[in-house]
Image (cartoon, rainbow over the protein chains, first blue to last red):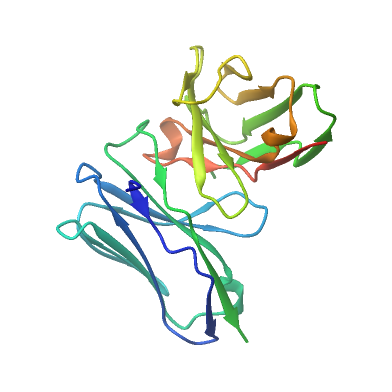
Length: 112
Length: 116
């Protein structure tokens, strides 16, 4: 079993839909959880950063972490065509220089 | 703030040649830089971690003699792919962190390497 599992999609939704992206993980030592957005042939851009369990909201984006289930989610409300990208979850055990472990990424297309 | 650049953005080379990729932190001091490789439709895989002024720490399975990393200053790290072969064709991405970035890594735009 890989440390981080993420459905690669592709996921196609109509503009305005609520998008739900998820990752599961096996290592209970992970404490820091991130979501990155990556446009084609570009580097990842940090969207959300969460420590331990709980919810975090930033504009149209909400990140949820459920450590008891080893499950994290990213919700995108009122999705826009400009949200079309690959979304990568990432996590690590400790702060700072501890390596990030990435999911495969889910490719999202928002259709106008 | 926290901008990371990479150069070149794209490189095509012949098999057997060496290629150098630069990663620069433009507005902060990068005490640590990370090098990742991403194959098509795959996730980012960490290759190595480098701290300024120290030797890089390579992940299991990454040949340190083939992928030479130098982090000689607080704003520049280089990755040299020596004697490149077609299987080395990939998207190479660096990230950096330092005192000015809090706890986070900021990623460069990536370099697409194609070895013919």
